[in-house]
Amino acid sequence: MRLLQIDSSALGANSVSRQLTERITAQWRATHPGTVVEHLDLAVNAPSHLSLDSLGFRMGPSAEGLTDVQRKENAISEALVSQFLAADVIVVGAPMYNFSVPSQLKAWIDRVAQAGRTFTYTENGPKGLAGGKTVIVASTRGGVYSSNPALAGLDHQESYLTTVFGFIGITDIRFVRAEGVAMGEAAKVQALNSADLAIKAHTAVAANQAEATLTA
Image 1 (cartoon, rainbow, N blue to C red):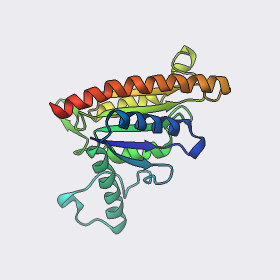
Image 2 (tube, rainbow, N blue to C red):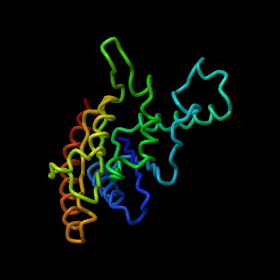
Image 3 (cartoon, rainbow, N blue to C red):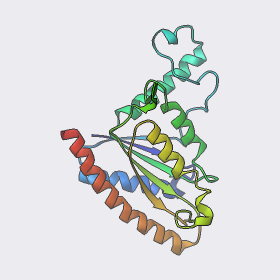
């Protein structure tokens, strides 16, 4: 089994989402000691945002005649989408930045959401090609959105991730949420304690499902 841990927070050691991805990965490895873990730190090594040189994915005859810059960008996209497709479990650290996800995480998503690789269009509409994976998202927010109707409409973080992973065929998407981490130390401790309970629950359920898939 292969697990890909993705971090996107720019806060380094002060990041709550990074604390949670580490805990999720550690808990997963505790139940599956043979799991191979690969780490992608998007705050350190993020792909560039889409441009005319990086837009789209080119392989085979369509890769002929590319400029040096286009070949370089194409290689980056190929490496990222291949790494993603090779993983059985993806742990994503996704803090809320201005009601959405960090731009470096969006840049990664733009590279792996590739027509012909992770989704395709059919006569019946789009079809995801990356199914059978488990995604566990470490979702962190300074405020409380999930239980506050007045703020729920501002959440373009979890809703976006659910949409984009679902679009490429992933239906097993789990959220480990820590809310209110900027609302005082007591609220932060409570949020982390709740997240720890969610980690144990989600990794146990997801682990059983992944194991059943691999042995089917």
